[in-house]
Amino acid sequence: MLTIISPAKIQNFNPQNTISDYTLPVFLKEANMLAKQLGSYSISELASLLHINSKIAEENANRYFHWKTPFTPENSKQAIFTYNGEVYRGLDAATLNNEEILYLQNHLRILSGLYGALKPLDLIQPYRLDVKDRLTTEKGDNLYSFWKKRVTDETAKALKKSDNPNVLLNLASAEYTRMLDIKQLKVRIIDFDFLQYNPDSDTFKPITIYLKRARGLMVRFVAQNRITDPEDLKAFSADGYWYSERFSTENKMVFVQ
Image 1: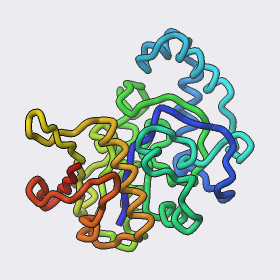
Image 2: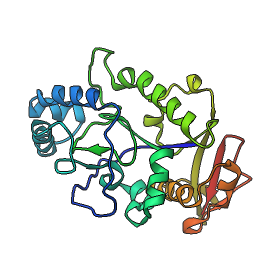
Image 3: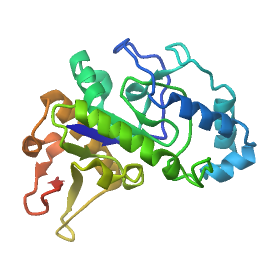
Image 4: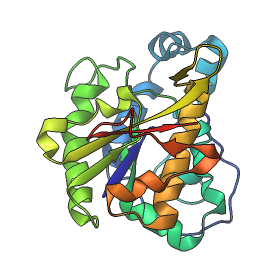
């Protein structure tokens, strides 16, 4: 069974001492090509492409200017310890033990607009590039055309090596899920939703910040319990969530809080 999640814009490149092991991105050659292309853009061009202000554009122009291969622990950092958005705060990888991190290495993929698909311990350098940003490549006028076949094939390989090759747990956002050719994978894909109760309207609704954190908590739950059977996911109870039979379907698991 394999799990996919999205990356995060917030990145922390402070040194970490949790684990010294590292790997290199399988699509480092492609990432290098995209980084070099981005490095050729002016600050105003980057601002327009990435939908950011000039200050952030200047910061990222500097990042791509200093992009350097080969990746080493001196100029890069493992992805799972670098991303620092709500998903990764829920996952809290720095508090997992080495066995749990290595489990994720074989059972988790982080989808990325620049790197395609990352294993948790893959080294990365600072960047800003969402998969929805319309960067033109030889494959077309967007990153989906550039990555879809590559990432789908790599995901299929990772699934075959997992302990349950017939199930993909989709904890990624919709924009990153689109990087995969779902039909081509030919596996059971389980989506997730995490809802909060609103007593004023007596309804359950998703709240983005809690939804993202819950995705990370679920990844953590899978790692700590070595889940191989989707039925066992119903025991997830972090942050007061419980499985809702009422809202769930065969291929969508809904948890409420």
